[in-house]
Length: 239
Image (cartoon, rainbow, N blue to C red; front, side, top):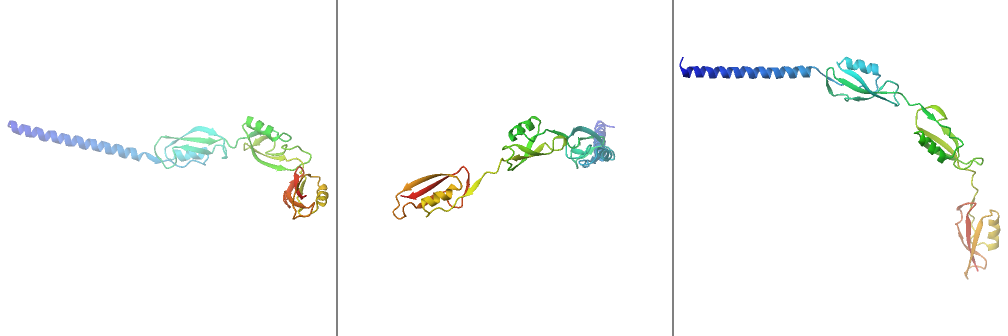
């Protein structure tokens, strides 16, 4: 065999070895990818399921469950509140799903607020990590203004919400009057009519030749207005 023939044979063998090695490498990569994808499963939705049921769902897919935390929630005890990874994600077999379980509704200690002022009750609730909820009012002659007369939830243990709704006293109902129509009346008659209400009044006398002497030509507030007992009525009288 000549030198040239030997070189050609060596080149062919080298090329053959390269082709075989490349084919083996590609086959190995393909086999690894098939093996990896063949061991992937879809993460199920665990939120809202009991921890034992969630564990069975994961085991049937070759996954493991790990409890990451427990928190108070509206869900029953040991129900999954959150999960990581989320549902629908591809997972490798034997990987873990981290879940947060519910401790149930938190049983809060509600203090007695009835008989206290609204301001003092706000401070007390904030100190306990609670807060005032809806505030309603009712007129009550026997209770001072802003005194809490009813609360919900009631005092004690067992409340599921940190908000406490209260009903407060607005004090006795304030006496009020409806402003009568006085314009055109004689001042004396108008004053007699207002004497019944015992409202304070202020009279201004102005020159008004077109009006009879002593006639009421203007009033404030206007007729029909609602007046508290502390209001002052102002009359303008022709002089």
